[in-house]
Image (cartoon, rainbow, N blue to C red; front, side, top):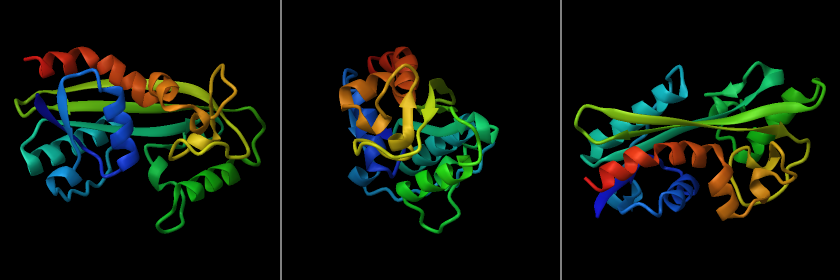
Length: 199
């Protein structure tokens, strides 16, 4: 099986991505698996730019085919914020996921509900032959006032999918890995990932 490096230092994200991609014949590797220490400055102007930066950085550090993603939460009442700054949105140094959720809710408090929002994800595959393949996924929904659930990370505990009653953090892995923004991006990417795996 071909190796595929997942360009993230977030173990939650690594597990989620490899579960979604499990049907493909790859040998999935994390940075930790190969002793890689790569810290990418995510200063692109879009999810695609940031995902490309990560894919290229991890590829050049490892020499391995690399799959990267960048994602964020866009809230209509905040004119699309936090967006590509989702992970760095809370001003508190070394902010936790709980800090980020609390800060977002504090910013939304003056705005009338519903707090319509959508998760976005861009994935990029770089194989070292000069071409990067990419796909985008969107998961619409809304923000709630109180966090619920512990099977997730980031803003999952305060985000309810459109047409659902549970937060992303209340969903079991099988359901989340079918409906999430990352799942939708990876599902769109399946044709070129499959072609590469079997080439």
